[in-house]
Image: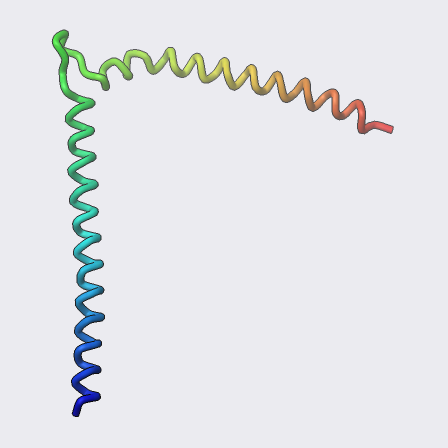
Amino acid sequence: MKKNKHKHLIKNAVLSKTQILKDMGLFKTVVLGAALYGAYKYATKKDVNGRSMVDDLKDKAPEFMDKAKRFKDDMEMKYTNRADTYTDVKQP
């Protein structure tokens, strides 16, 4: 009889531990959702001029794209030139 009682207690302990882990998963999800909501509200909050950070990013997006394209072109040119010097060395 005592063995069955101990098995029952162990079974309940394991079940309660898994339940705690499930509850922690739910808690983490709620906290993450609240953080994302707060970030969204902060990013879309209008300032004195009636503009938000999202509006500023939208306006500056073409400028950022041009900078990224120039950076890509510079890197391609740099590594293309480097590759050409190595191909000269490899040729017998």
